[in-house]
Length: 234
Image 1 (cartoon, one colour):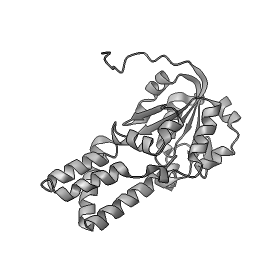
Image 2: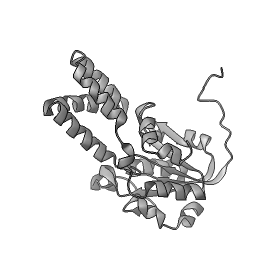
Image 3: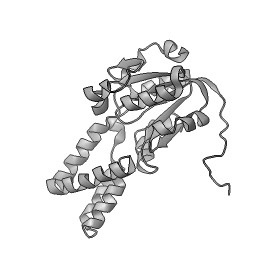
Image 4: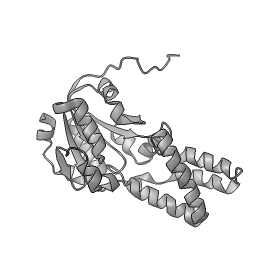
């Protein structure tokens, strides 16, 4: 069996341009998922139980750097003395219909970008729940499995380029700090697009704290009408 190693060279043909598209609050409404989960926990258990779960969740986010929904559930379950009722939360998390959270036009945008150049879903998260979410939402198939998940993707842009070499990149992301990191890493080789969706793209302080994106759109579906040629040309 061939050992999987991060330093194994990746043979991908170099492309003139590659599109990199975020998931949470870019292609799907992740804020709504959190709201749904909070409502479910409060209704199925109690508001104090909901708060106990989110206390663990927030602490793990600080420690790990990503939302560890299943790990937080595991810790919560152990803290309650392995309460059998909490086992139903795993089914809620795993069966959640993420396809219903896709922003209007999200799959059409991926189809349009993919017809123009290689298109990669580039997202933060863990190696279990985040790819599960991507697959459940239909995004994995939409980009033919071109999916990259990192704990902190802004620290892995060199690896992104190694796996998907291109002369230029177009990054579509709702987080101003990610857009700023991509600009710092690739400079003029990247064009950035900020959809004004979700809590980060609509936080005035966060937006003001970072350089503006090259292009700002109100919603991901606006990319269906946007002229891609200037973006791809750089």
